[in-house]
Image 1 (cartoon, rainbow, N blue to C red):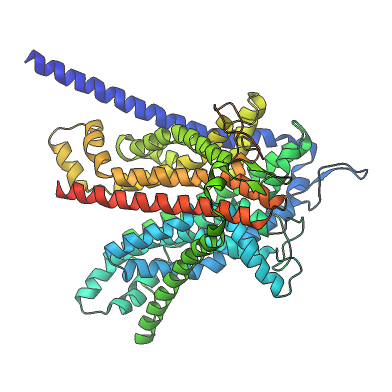
Image 2: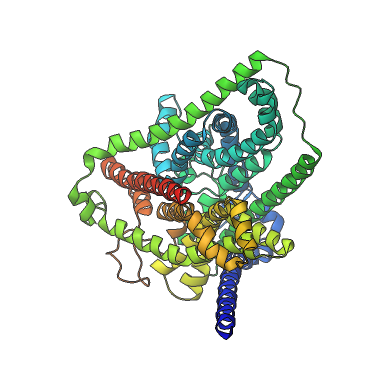
Length: 589
């Protein structure tokens, strides 16, 4: 009996330690994400007294250098450019995303849906700098051939950004449509209603009212995109016109932070511009939460479909819409990979992979090995910081948080951080580590910026996996007297190990393909392979962008893009296969 009491006491002590550790890590993750907002706000606040809030927000003249007429800092055109490109991208992607989600929810079986969703994840994993490069080589050149003087314009940026936001919109819309299908359509099918007529008359009318949160989250994601938009929008301080050049807030920060003197009005203005982006994301997140609350209340009273009276013609319309949306998304995936692989395969060699870049113009000779090694250093540093915090946040929200208000507050911080522009994470790391802590450009500063960027990315996916664990398994374990920490450690995490690993690998790919946070934190044009986190380093996406910026010949750029895309494809396939194997083994056991 004393032995039993001792064992129970040790178990209670171990559970207490585990729960305390998870809660502490979760608190640290929330504090780190909240610190980004506070730091950027504090660094940008002096612009209010130096320039004036109205002049900063409503002025359209941006002249950081005084050439005798006085410096000016007005970001109205940049705000308008960010909104215009984002709205245009959503308008172009919306119908395609709805059609693709309709196909995945109503036409595809579970196995096909899983395979297609894994393929769509490839679009989300492609680095933004590759999107920008393909946009320059394909979209901009198409505009030039059509008679546009430069090919770079707001419409070109909107097209590129539309493809980038498609996977995010399709994923969230598919979840909404699957929920509607399971709730309403099953009964209709049992009554003899055709599948496509049910999709047209039930799923579409109800789902369209539930998709606004997905649209608003995609808008926040589009507002913060930096590299791809910067490479094709033209970067001119002009009020945006469809076929005219423009510039976004994110591209303004990326282009000018490296030239702004520390403590200058110019630097304060750039931080304030980043804070404006965060405020827009906060506003969008608040609207999304309000819309979700309204929709949940309406759903509790019963949601009615609209009066769609086209009959069989409507069913045919739904089928065509679904197949067309899926075809467009699949076509984008196939084209992007086929284009980059076909153009870059001929320039890949062992020497290109293992040598350092050289030449009168850096990159025209040699290879990319220091960039590969530097990307590995940045990504590994980011994962070491982000994975424990993201996992702790997910476990805390699903299993340990006892107060709904606390869980809601933590969820709002994660949601805002998920939509925060990556360039703003770079601003935070620059202000705290590079400048104030005196570390200079180094792997640690870049890794922290990337970690802050991928914490919400990983947490959202891990939390979803944890919530999809069968409730009867967890309830049975609780009924047997198991503690929450024991259930999480021995039942929940092993069950969804494949999904958790997939979330971590996708987060690693997200960090590997990021260039904007590294521009002024740890990435440099040339450096040897680092031997520690206190040294600067090259990275693959930043090297690709810098080669384009200095006019390097296209073959080396295609080959670098080939390496990036090959890493995305290989990792995605490996994770999908591992998740399927783990799930089958678990079900058999």
